[in-house]
Image 1 (cartoon, rainbow over the protein chains, first blue to last red):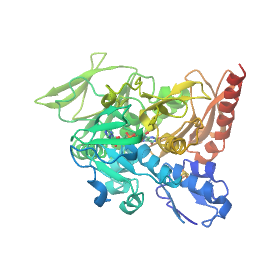
Image 2: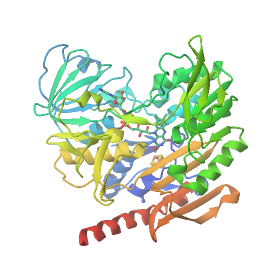
Image 3: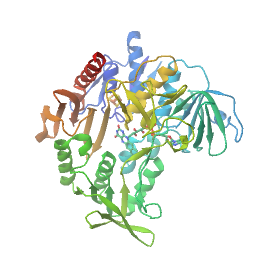
Image 4: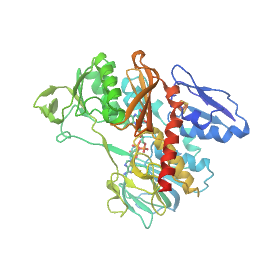
Length: 64
Length: 410
Ligand SMILES: Cc1cc2nc3c(=O)[nH]c(=O)nc-3n(C[C@H](O)[C@H](O)[C@H](O)COP(=O)(O)OP(=O)(O)OC[C@H]3O[C@@H](n4cnc5c(N)ncnc54)[C@H](O)[C@@H]3O)c2cc1C
Ligand code: SF4
C-alpha cells in the first residue's frame, strides 16, 4: 500500500490523525497533515484506509 | 460510467438494484465508497437531482467563489475513480416520491427505481425571503451553479449585503470583502455565529470582520428586500432602515430536502427521523445533512450540517447495511475559514458554557478554548491552532462517553 497526500487540498481537520496516528501527523503551525510514512505496514492498512475515507477534503489517495 | 448511465430506461421499471442512494453528493457518494470498500457485491444506483458529477460544497464559499480554484477542482472524485465503483449514476433527474414498503422511488422524468435498501442523502436547500424569487441580483449559495452565478455577480457589482449571520453568511462576507467589494453583514444575533461559537469567540470574529472592513449590522432582523424594475436595490431591516445594495446574498439557513417523501409515510420532522443506526424504516436509511438520528451518547435526536458528518455517517450507514448494527455516536466537528483564520469546533458550544483559553493566546491570534457546562466539557474550539485543538478532541469524546454511561446507569 502507498499513501499520497495532497497538502494543497488538506483543510487541517486532523481526522486522519484520529484514524491512523502512526501514519499521519499535523504541522504544529498550521495543522496541515504530514505523512509519517507513505508505506504503511499491513497492520496499519485498515486504519489508513479509514483515514482516507473520512478525510473531509479528499486529500488522501491510497494505491493498493 | 457512461455505459451504465442509461440502464434505467425512462418510464420503465428496472431490474432491482441492491442499494439505491438518493442524492449524489458528499454523503451519498461516501456511502457507495464505504459499501464497496466493505466488499458489497450487489448492484448500486445513485440518483442525483443535479446534472453534475458529485462535487464538494465547502470550497464553494471559499476557493470557487474567490476564483482561486477552477470549478473542476471541487469534484469529489475524478471520473476514473467513480467508474471503478461500478455504480450506476442517474444524474439530473430528481426523486419525486417514494413507496416505502415497496422500496421504490419515482423520478421527475418518470423512472421507477427499485432496491432492497434505499439511502436518503438529499441534503438541505436554502431558505429564501419573501419576494426573493422575482428579483435579479439576489442569490443563495448551495450548489455549484449558485456559486458560479454569485461569483459573476461579485465581479460585476460593488455593494453587497449578506443577509444571515451564520457560518455561510460570515464566509461569503469574508470572501467578497477579500475580493474588494463593499460588504455589509446583517443578522439578528449580537455577533456573527454567536449561537455556534458562544459569545466571547463570536465577539472576536466580529472584530476580525470589522478590522477587515466588513460593516456589521447586528442585532436586527431583516424585513425584506427592496427593488426597482425587477432588480434588487436594498435590504430593509426591522428598524425601518434600508441598506442599499446592488447584490444580496440570502444565507438564512436551509431546510432538509424531504418534500419528495411527503406521501411515503416515513417520519419527517426537521429531517428524516432515524434510530441510532440511522434507519428510518426497515431497509431505509438517511445520511448527511438530511438525517435526524438518535445520538445515543447525547441522548437526543440530532441533525448535523457539516462536512465530516456526511462522510462519517456514510461509513456508519454502509457498515449497518453490511450487518454491523452499531449506534452512530460521532464527536460533532466543523471548520470554517474566514480572512485566512481557520476556526475548528469539536463537540457543541452552548451559549451558557463557561469558556476557558487552554492553549495559545487570543491576543496573538492563535488559541484553543475549552467549553464547559456544569463542570462537564461540551466542546473545544481552535482559532488558528488546528493541531492543538485536535489534540483536545479526546476530552470531548471522553465527556460524551461518560454521559452515555451515566445515562445508562439510570
Ligand atoms: C457553500 C457551503 C460551504 C460549506 N462549508 C463548510 C465548511 O467549511 N465546513 C463544514 O464542515 N461544512 C461546510 N458545509 C456543509 C457541507 O458542505 C454539508 O454538510 C455537506 O455537503 C452535506 O452533504 P450531503 O451529501 O448530506 O448533502 P448535500 O451536499 O446537500 O447533497 C445533497 C444532494 O442531493 C441532491 N438532491 C436533492 N434533492 C434530490 C432529489 N429529490 N432527488 C435526487 N437528488 C436530490 C442535491 O442536488 C445534492 O447534490 C458547507 C456547505 C455549503 C453549501
Ligand atoms: S483528514 Fe484530510 S483534511 Fe484533515 S488533516 Fe488529514 S489530510 Fe488534512
